[in-house]
Image (tube, rainbow, N blue to C red; front, side, top):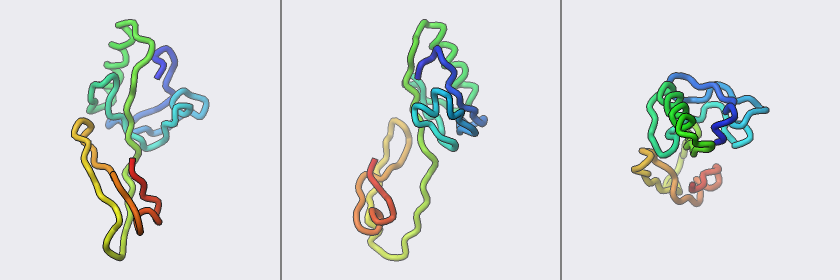
Length: 114
């Protein structure tokens, strides 16, 4: 993100986007409502105050840009038959589980690897 411009997002206390201005930088970058901030500049975050503090620190250090990692909201899928058609892996750095392969029923319902 460009630290010189407003992100255009409003977050709840737990870093989940409550709104994203359609004319803002966040929307242009693909951020949507219900997405959660995970980190900025490689530093994991726990709450919105940490995000504000970290952004202010990066700006005070003269940085013009920083990488912000978001995760979309969880996807819930129900399957009536086995095999489900997907496998799951964990990204230890981000602490997230994700679909790393899909086929059959999962693929038919829109399940895709990251």
